[in-house]
Amino acid sequence: MKVLDLRSIFGLQATVTTSSLDTGGAFVEMEVTAEPGAGVTPHYHRGQEESYQVLDGTLEVLREGSWRALRTGESFTVPPDAVHAFRNPANVPVRFLNVHRPALQFEDHLTTVDRLVREGKVRGMNDPRSLIYLSMSAAKYRPDVQVKPPHWVISGMALLGRALGFRLQG
Picture 1 (cartoon, rainbow, N blue to C red):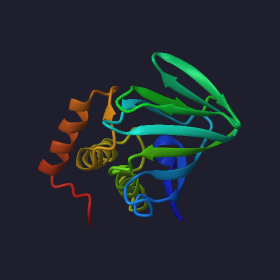
Picture 2 (cartoon, one colour):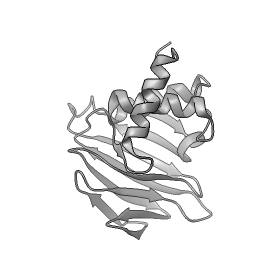
Picture 3 (spheres, rainbow, N blue to C red):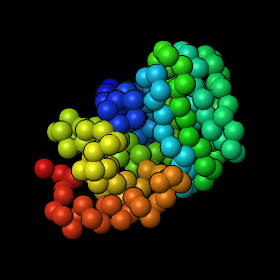
Picture 4 (tube, rainbow, N blue to C red):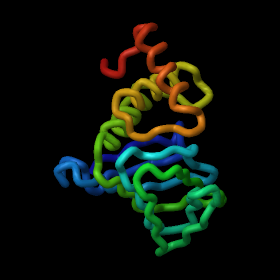
């Protein structure tokens, strides 16, 4: 099992419980721990379904403009191409299973981001260099399409990074 430390960016730590390689790309499953206040901005996945099953705590999921609280034992599936987000509004961590079906390159993106964090290239969401590296990974692997900030901002930052000589490898 692979542990991805994304706490400095999203407040999340994800353990890959079933990799995309194990399923021939059919899906990737992760057990995620979201720290208090953690979350992701509105986005959607082209041709990819995402599901959440809460193992412990309460996770809020944004879908169709409304936040829905999922408590321990509850599940929710976001259809492909549907705008969504999630957050942990509580003052305690929440644990949930997260599945992306098909896997596409979602796991590759998170693995790259984890490596960039460990190398010190990504330090947080308030660091311009970090945002450039995150944008470059997102442009390469296309794990999702951001709604906020708009996708064109991510693409532009990735181009800027390549022009400045930033590299995802090495």
